Image (cartoon, rainbow, N blue to C red; front, side):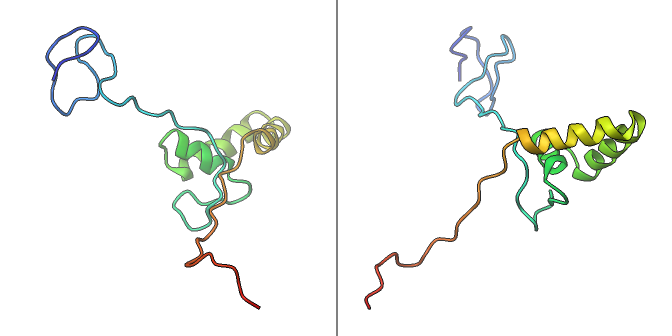
Length: 110
């Protein structure tokens, strides 16, 4: 396979050109920062899902993000940390709700 930008030969399973650094093939879609809604996933939502959303966005362990959040809140004074969390709760959108599919979406005769 060849890079479309520089024309150099690259590996067949490569996603980036090792010569120029351009993305090859389908460009990766950027992750959006959203608050977690799931209760049962590994990135569980404890209060508002802010730490779980950050952990998922940056591919980190949710426990480490929570510990860092508590540490930063205590280190900077409690008020700035709580205000920051509340602002993130308001600003960061929540994960879309998944609705169950109905087996047959037919009108009920009555």
